[in-house]
Length: 227
Image 1 (cartoon, rainbow, N blue to C red):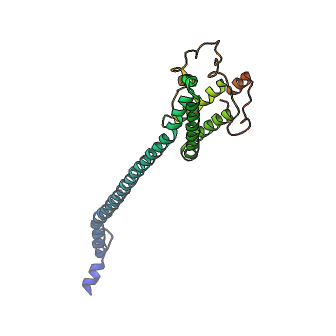
Image 2: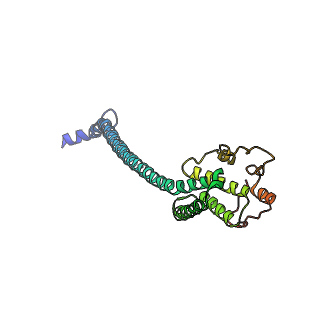
Image 3: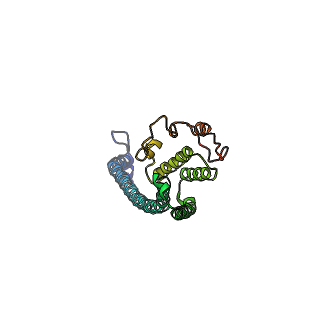
């Protein structure tokens, strides 16, 4: 009994002996608790970092695979476009060839058949693979032929079609112009007294008005958009 009483008596610090012992234990345990909590937080952060890195790696793999898939798809579409465009481009080149006058009646008939065949093929393929710009340029070119457009108008719409094809085949930033299409072929391209003078520089509506020809596509989606 006396020992219990003595154990509960206050020491010089004002705390009973058992209180001092408890305080000593608590104070001694604080670094261990702090160290344990810090260690647990470090492990948690390390696990989170590892999970984040794994997710980023998986995302990178998916992104790489998606990029490769899109590249393969783009390549296949590009091949289909080339197959659709080139035959028509070649036959248009022959149509505008200065040697047309030397064809016999039979040769001209065969050429006309070939032209119609390629136009029909392109119409089928173009609806699927060509850009909106190409499709509209093709529509203007065909409508001009149906409406017996003057030579200058024909030159203009054919040039627009070829440049649209050029951009659609991959060179979207191409700076090629209407002049660039014809410069290699026409000796009087820059002759201001030539009947074709201004075909490349005038606004289309102004060019048509100068030729006394009214585009049949006015007021439709085929109409040229003013810059």
